[in-house]
Image: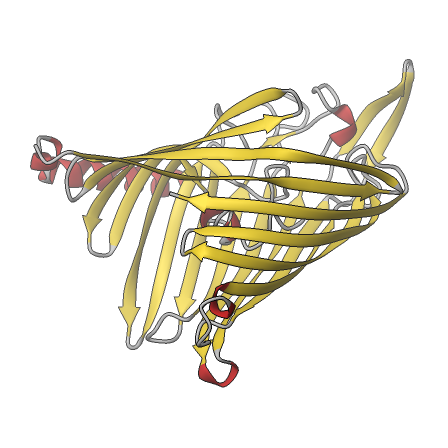
Length: 386
């Protein structure tokens, strides 16, 4: 059934392109560079150990090319100063073709529409916080980007609207004891540029906007891969299923003289159980057996007095966020932690914001952490979209 869906997707694209050959010889080519970046100052207090530093943040140029009204290409580079080095990553690069008013196809490396945070909210000038919610970053429990193909679109249903996305990618890769990080055996790596088996991942997201002004959206996402282990390996038959619910509500309310913005997402990951024999010490092995389920969720609210008569007040925004991450208790990457963040933002323009943010992360476990977690941080961040 999955192969039929994939074949149908590419067949639909092929015949549509054949029918619209003029789109490839258009002389009205357009090229544009957009993107975002940020700089700031960070202060951390981790279990009483303090450190602080100015940061160059990141720079993310986005390249947009329009061949015609139907055919386009987009790509984003992410440049980050990490420690003493510069990391460069291709966030996405894909071809987009508009089939009709209700269908668009894209192929290449694209941001996976699993929930909404990664695809829509992660750019630093759009994210109301300088940090991402727990479990929603590059090392999160859900896909960020993937290499494959997608069919997406939207249509009206009465006064409401429905959006949809159906896609297939190379899928995630399972971390195992013979890999580079054996202590994280059982985790998924989603940056799988080349498929490690002959199985693909399949996903979908359905979004419902019940009001004619599109002020609210409720979304459901599903993502599955029947094989995430290496081809021919002992974990080849391990599969995974993920689902997510997301919510967004943005409304200008005269009674409070401003705009309220609510965002939230709940994600759950289930990977087939397996036994991972890990070498704890030279010659000493331990079998890790655990129920491989993880979940991450966040809720965020912001208020901005956009209807105020004061030019200063209408540019101030108050924001608060709660997020939580739970991973398998008996695994080598076990963690149970929560994040409470509050912030004060000042908008210099619609695409430039200065953020003052306080964050407190508590819990236990996690990457390279043994025992209790008590991390406090203060951020000053200036983010610009261009």
